[in-house]
Amino acid sequence: MNILITGAEGFMGRNLREALYQRPGAQHDTFALIDVRSPEAELRAAARVADFVFHLAGVNRPEDPADFMHGNSGFTETLLAMLEEGKRPPVLLSSSTQAAMQNPYGESKRAAEQAVRDYGLRSGVPVLIYRMTNAFGKWSRPNYNSAVATFCHNIARGLPISLSDPEAMLRLNYIDDICAEFIRALNGHPTREGDFCAVHPVHEIKLGDLSALLNTFHSGRDALDVPDQSDPLVRKLFATYLSFLPPDDFARPTVTHADERGSFTELMHMGGHGQVSVNVSRPHVAKGDHWHHTKHEKFIVLAGEGVIRLRKIGDGTILSYRVSGDTPMAVDIPPGYTHSIENLGDTDMLTLMWANERFCPEAPDTVRLPVDSERGKS
Image (cartoon, rainbow, N blue to C red; front, side, top):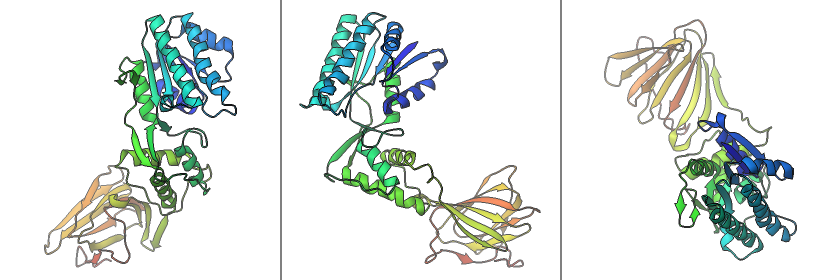
């Protein structure tokens, strides 16, 4: 299939083409990537053989308002005329909810929509018109594509942002959802709603709440906090925020507690999902010998050889689990069981540890008690 993409170097175009490259059978497709710098001859040649067109190109922030009509409606009509000289393929148009409004940008998008409809009637082929709301995601441009892009860029750099109306409600489409819908449309299964097509889900958030959330992402990195991403919008916004980090600001130091027995390093704090840490045990050292009332953990030995021992409070039976980095397994540490982990090897043993809550020095929920009273390790 010959696939033509206009606006291929833009935010949406870059994401779409990468998604298209990964679809099944993409190795048999030919892609014509057209952008503002493409020569007219290249566009004409691509239009002549195109089997499907993603028309994403457009103008939304020109210096001269007259360029709205030229860049949106005018270019669309030029493209459609070229397509009619070839195979007359289906066309997917990325329009805007602004097309329903009486402003220069909206009028130009509405005219582009009509041109595409007329082309579909003349050519007898499907046309798919998506009135897009605010799109956000990786590779978007600050001060151009959306408030999300601008806020992420500025907050990641400690720069101020402007809140014209904190109560203003934003309606957002995530770029991966857009690409998935566009590929469904290419495969003949668009989401149609009346005269238009739609991308779902549409997320809603107030401008002030967006600012507050992105600021927690910023401050949380210093504390090694990972936000709760059970809310799909939070997950998508956090991914977008991370994509705007300055190249020299990807890393943060961890917190390490060390003594002669080895070390314990806090890696991530995950709010209601607990804490992830890594423990280094020196050769032939046992650590632990304590229990918790409520806290529970999982231990996974990643390197070395050792044994995890547990004993239920009030019971003399000791449970032993041999653990090895060669065959990692997750061992649950329930509340009410005193436990220890001993390095049986001659090299350091590395253990990944997850706890259901972040360690709090003021309320550690840690009661010292040897698993084996004869050893009395602490």
